Length: 283
Image (tube, rainbow, N blue to C red; front, side, top):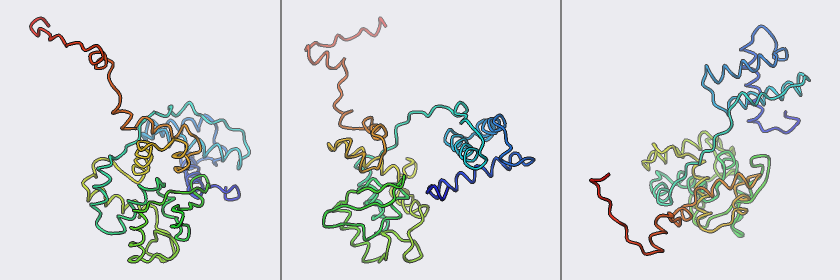
């Protein structure tokens, strides 16, 4: 997998899933596990452990890779064992909530994190590896290198966020990465970055709403769409491979929802009809 330039997180996940099934069938090696035994194992994950679709799908893909590239055996993904992905709208914040979140920050580092996430729409792991040298304050963009899928892209650089980052740099003095951990010149761990964000949500009184770094990303995209930015531009800023992924934000446009008129209201307004009061006694 390293030769194939797989992401470190993918390698860890695949190795973990192979180890788990080997522990589930300790009497045989992983390469000897049959298709029916794999199906039984995935059913065990679903029915006994209560694992969701993503976990089952990860297990199936890890085993598929193992059998095809390591054991050199044919293997068909048992997709019938994990349910069709449910269509769920992402959680987003209102603009007022974002303002309140920024105003509630306990320190400048928290504020820099919040403003950076919201103004760029960057993913959590992508944010932790932003290099200082890749911030172009003249042309007002940030060059993201090796984002999800090993893809480079340009992020927006907000003038408001730039001012905050300059103040942040004066106090914290990062050397290489914009957000560094306790070790100089080493990027902050994603869990530490998430901790800063979670702390900000708690301070702002938004803990119970289930907001996260990805909520700021969803909010960035939705608010950009509300402001009139075209869908293709938002797709490029977010780093989506398919426009269909970006189209989910069409369901979240507040201005579009606010402009919708019920056909019943339209009927009465257009025809200037007076509503006939109902006789409650006869209902």
